[in-house]
Length: 229
Length: 229
Image (cartoon, rainbow over all chains, first blue to last red; front, side):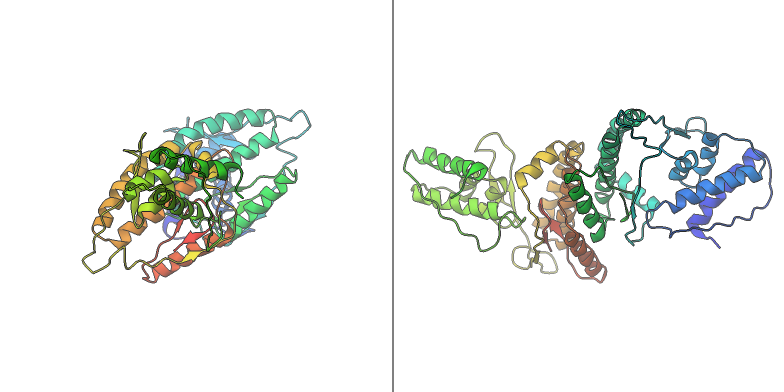
């Protein structure tokens, strides 16, 4: 039984599908995670992406994945990206024609690295409660928000180009830098909320030591204490 | 025997005193710390402040403390503030008449808190090398530097007013927030340098738990892993 804000978000997704399909049927939604939620591992993203796809199919709609992403983003923005998968970008927009996720073109680098096939992710789970919406509210009130918003435009151009060329270091250097920028913005919000934990920093240190030894590895945190390596 | 950049900084201080006094005497400077250096505990600040005072006296100059602060800042900016002590502000300026440190007016709050007498500091030493000049270079190249510079003006006005009224929470909330802003700016520089260590975050967590229990306590980091509580 889901209640509160989570239930509201589910209702927004379900109601949108009802509207698109012109149906008014009751829905029973069952969801199971193979990993814990609210820890920065994308349980909302994957859950809402799966729900959007299932609901669209149940309603008999024939939609492309970018179209399904407009349904999923009613649940969470990252769910929209999870619908199209791999390296996806959710464009800003005030309507469903503009605001949708699409896969970015990914190339293979000169030395044969394929970002879609050859990437290996180690997820370091650091137990600490996280609430993405709360983090976003904090960040929005930070004195650094404008600087971040401006900088993100450069980062997106950089990332899109790096993916096209399959350049490992450029792609993940940009990702690491952006996750530091996100944390910097959130922790300078009114609550001064540092969502990293001691173990988070320990993983950063390990990653940087490996990198100094020549291992091609980068870290990234979402709005939580867990780290993707 | 001091060499390299440290020796250059000492030379700048010594040469400035020679110039002020119109003397050209050789100088032997001996310095001893009762605590380790390069860990974020202000060894440069206190060392250069002491050196500036000693050199000024040895040269027979009769200067006010704000005037001595212009000598000390040749060594490090925080040394200028250490000369005038307590709650000091180093004004920006392009010459020694403008760019000097002065004590801020401090009042006693309605409930009797005197920021100069009643403050207790616990210094949590987290061993990790720090180099303030390097941190400042990183911060200057961050996309968040402009936002920080703009925000600091508001923070200074807030702090000056809070000190005048002796308001514990306002003073140290501002200090805690500013130290997060400084870290945010440094870690979004080109090197993505996170100078906190796992123990730093552990101290943050302890401080916030105490605060939730009603204990009036705040944290602050300099450009290093150590924490002042």
